[in-house]
Image (cartoon, rainbow, N blue to C red; front, side, top):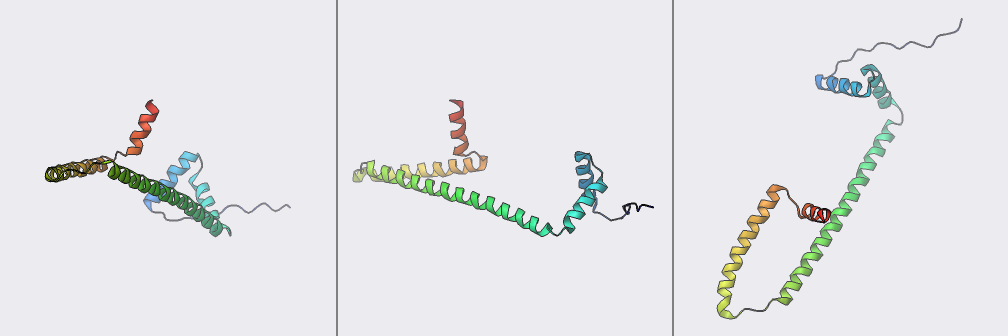
Length: 141
């Protein structure tokens, strides 16, 4: 008589209600039984290469973060250089004011600075960024 393969055995586990709901939702989306998904998850967890897969996933995330960080550093460097170039150009192009006009100019400068700070705070609070505005300007043309 031929030996039949060993039948699956029942295992009862207690799950957190939220985890149980997530498992059921996932099973519904995949059109699979919750039991089959739980079995695959346990097999994956117990497989000898599980640690290697976790490590590979972590390395992949770290690589993505590193690329992001390099982009941010590059963008910050470009921004800094742009600001320095603008300030240098502006300082080289302005004509010095006569002594009697400097007091009025300082007062106007203080008012303009306050309005600038208010506008900056408003933009930051709104979440609008210049990159978004520039992108929409170029796509609308």
